[in-house]
Length: 227
Ligand code: IPE
Ligand code: IPE
Ligand code: MG
Image (cartoon, rainbow, N blue to C red; front, side):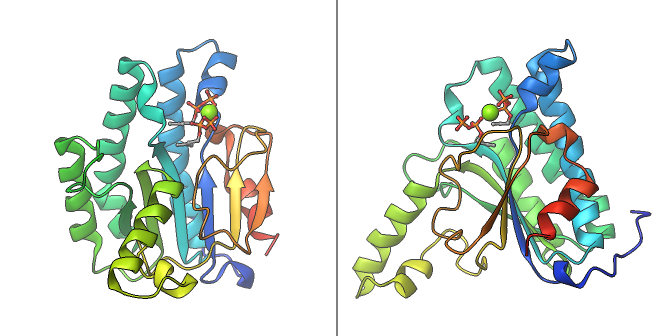
């Protein structure tokens, strides 16, 4: 919040998408339980939201939890759910930074959705309480899988007429999400893992060996510099 606005013009309005990986390994390296890594990861995200919005990033989209992540141990899943509750509850600082919150994932009212009601409530609350903000749009992908998103969009496009890239785009979970400028993946994994496959067509990719809890404003600057 105290960070001054950067003069870096390349960040203006750009879309940065992050696969926040390596929380577990970060914790293991510190001799901590994996869940401590998720706690640190949520805090790192709060810092990155501040830094990105100070730099004039227009859109920040983060992969919080995938449709494949439900098979993790129950205790770990519960911990991650609670961290999303915390993240969507950071309304004071989100509003202070003029950040508008959104969410993408399997729609709550559709078959297959697994987001528990207490997290749904927090998500809805955060969206409505930040809807008037005019700064950066923070989109959190939770219970999200890109191939399911694309399959659904094709299904919907075909119900209403011709299936073209334009009509498919119009049926994405968040149709106004612009193309990704830089896709970031932390922790040294050189993979995409079913994230925003439709939206990254022309994206640059920033792979870093740093784990997500270590991803800081300097790392963000290095990613933005690829634009
Ligand atoms: C990313 O960290 C967080 C989620 C996928 C929810 P990981 O938990 O995947 O950490 P590593 O990859 O095991 O180190
Ligand atoms: C990708 O990380 C998903 C999120 C960051 C939420 P994973 O750690 O789940 O990815 P894989 O399974 O290694 O591809
Ligand atoms: Mg991982």
